[in-house]
Image 1 (cartoon, helix red, strand yellow):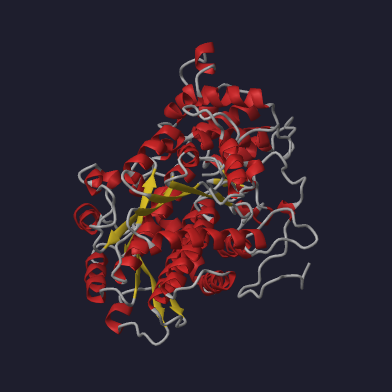
Image 2 (spheres, rainbow, N blue to C red):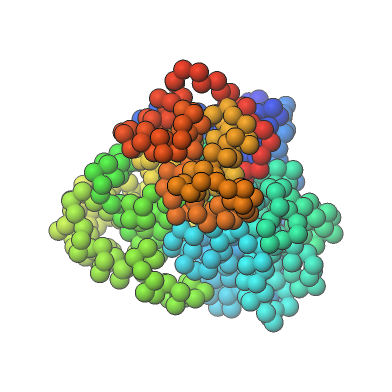
Length: 625
């Protein structure tokens, strides 16, 4: 209801939506639900896609409904109180840094966010002359930062072993485990281990589903489900020996694509909490809700400033779509941490859309020597692990074609002569270049550089706080803004390329157990057939041309994922087989003859005798990362 918000907001946040009603897709966790706002995403043009995804991002800042307070939200009293308590625990480590450590951990997008934030807060501490106290863990190690290796998040034991290594010899360790859908075994194992060792460890779980919706199917190498771990944490929160931070931020604009809103909400929540802890400890006071709200409003402002560029974002989306349509490549070239955001966006298109790693790729320009835990893991690992300035100059620049697009992402505080030199080199190969530039009020864009770009998205930020930590608020705003733009552009391009059905990723690559369950849920939704029948069809598509034996049917999910990970079009084949009541071989022929995956599925859905209900779902366990 309008007029019932507790806080004054910078942006117009949507009123509570249909997804908050208790009966809406009741069997599905929030992070996997279909967002009612984007139900017809596949029919939208570029401009409409930007508008819809912007509205979905605004839901992050939405307050809980007064008439219908179904879920706690980012601005809920309970969430803000927990943030204050966790910030207080971080301050204890900052006040007595000897033997202290703050670990940010996750798999996939969550692990990349952990990497980005540990880099930022170590940078902040070094600037204050303090010893850096942050580190990150990502399932699969440093190679997972720059490449798609989603399968590695399925092991709880792997998570515990990695944690033990970084925490060896430490006296007080805060472990912030990030799992958007409360689902990743990598994080569950770490949280469980911390609760068994509270003399040293304090576990903090961050995700965006209620605990009652946490994943509850068995973890193959562990004795608890994720939900059981989270419930145990809730009990221990009463004594402040564990914390769960899990506001609802609403379903993704693209169902289940937690790289988008889930990743952004992770960044907003944790950067707010950690920056407030640093800011107040330097002033010798404790964190309060007032400090948190001050920082949260700057992120709301970032949304306002970013989406005021909607028409230019839509133009960029169309340009990227054209390059991909012509079988060209899109290179996102970012300076400093904006390069990390660029790398994340490119990598995440691989499992989200079944894209080739060359389709959209990010590169980091600038020194990254002290960013990674084990930089050696990234050297000479092959083309899919290339991400640096040197990689771009040696392996990309010489082979650039005019159908390729290059997007330069920088701020006017960066080394502009270096930017200009690289732009000039690229322009010799392709005129298809764009700039995404951030500046502060009063800064001027040098004309010789500006005139090199046919099109520029130029975002000007107001001056903020003047003390040292305040400069990080602006850095965080620029990163989030860049993330929103790149996510919108790459998602929108794949929508325009016909990869999306309604607001579902029909061509996702089944890279871990979470994506296996998501694929199964989509088969049930679109075929209206039983869970058992859909499971059989999914296994047939994964193991084709091998026929299913009882041994294969009884195999653990990890075995199916291991095979599916290397295959393309598994989900569309299984769905066509169900809809057309045909073999996988026949489904392959239908797919080969169709202009796009979605065209052939739409045609099958419209065919005679198709009886489906969008809500004909049995209880199943999909979950986000």
